[in-house]
Length: 415
Image (cartoon, rainbow, N blue to C red; front, side, top):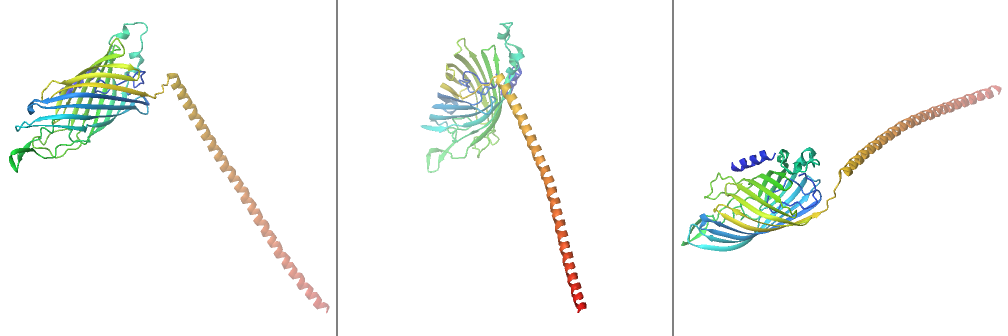
């Protein structure tokens, strides 16, 4: 409920930058939220980070997890400047110190595993910066362009859609202590030894999600980003005894990020609040850091963060790097107008050619009809002439027969 109230509050105070290509890299780092704007058509961006983290759980006899997390995000501008496809994931290496909370023994082991991989799409729905009355340059007042206006609270709005995939069932619902929480039972062959119970715990292989991202700019230096999305636990196996059967593993996520560009335009600082909740694990995280623009296509950053609670407590330190591969071809308004005019003329020309071909086919069909008529008339005339010739031959034969008969009769009479 707290998440929904926070989200509604920020929506009300910040009701949708353009999905425009920018001259410098536009990275989501050092935070973990997604800005509302795509990176631009035909632009590939790689955002990576390595973090060292430590988690300790008070309710599990201070069991501890130390590890390294390599995370990455690939972004690509698809079809136009409004659409972006992204692939996000992580690889973890961790050491687990299990002070078993039901028995008097401890274990320590290490493992490397693949975290959740997420593929998704982001599309800009509303861009307030296209309204020149709201965000146009004021040439009459220097101050007017550098104060917060009511229109600044109207955010850019994007929708996000995608799904996460788990390749290793040891990572479940962000709870890395899941394995330690498994109940233990006495060994049937040795009552002095207890072993972890073997059961089917919830496995989240596919987790589709849908959400929105908003972004506001204030006084040219402050950027506020809000993310809220709902993730479904699509597949669940048999529940363990220590979890209620009615547990809801769907996760509601909310992130609030604020970034401030310093007087030196190559430097910026940020703060972020993240909260998520499901039936197995919930947490609230705070993050702070800074980013440095090395060149227009390269950015480096560092950030630290953690949680305030101790079930578990979390602290991490992260170093990051972002690189843009820019194949974008910028089109000015004049070029766009010329392109539209060219397409319009091309369409008119194709239509004229089509009409001309249609008329030619029509004339050709008409010519064929007349020719067929003449051919038909010629055939009929030939048939008539052949019939007349045939009749003349018949009459000629008949006359020849009559003449011969008359000649025979005259010879016979003269005798």
